[in-house]
Image 1 (spheres, one colour):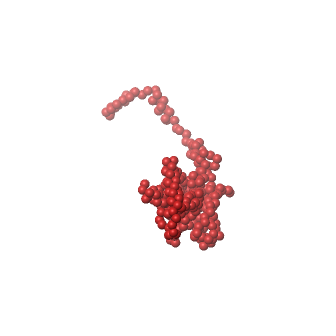
Image 2: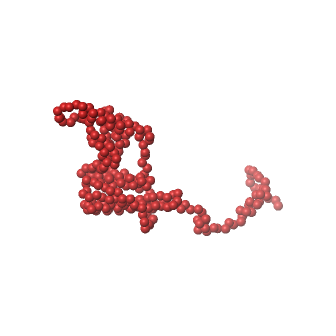
Image 3: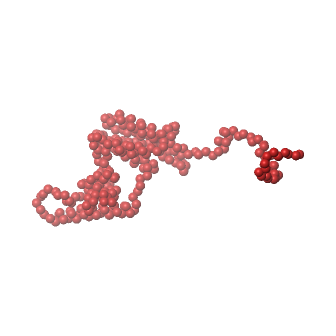
Length: 266
């Protein structure tokens, strides 16, 4: 059969038997597969993440912390309950689920209940909840803060509550505290030993000199007293702005922290 070509030929190719078989296969209609079948056959990710639709289990793992602040007459007890997601798997995760604060003191009852309910709602929402720590630790009491055991300064009662939440999140792995390197620990231990040796030397010199009683002068010897939490800092130490611990002393004319190693001179 003759075929009339009324257009300009730009190229050509030879039709092979393989091309004919491919065209025949393409002409066969493909049977449609229901979407439900495809979703069932497709492997799903069964890792459970924290979200607000997760129902509260009958049993939760909890930890209770004690706050003894000079701002309130009675101690406060902070309980944080955690939920365990993907238990028994490699994706097991422990997340805070709710928080309660109990105390005999009733003057702060109203705002404590409101705060703990809001915090519990944020915990159940999921996502990154560690921002609560920074927000709470930044709250200052206009009447002034206080020092807790260990010489750590707390600007407010809310800030200490935030410090407890931070400690709890560190214990369950939500917050990772950068540890000091071996070199930094060695330098800090050396500075503490130098300060203790200097204090002991000044004490020995004072004992050998007998003078009439006089008012204490700057630079006199002082004992290294344990201030709490196993930390031993001199009573005259001042507040370190980096770690908020009363452990800043003057060594060789430079302010040096005996707790975190901070030095004003670098």
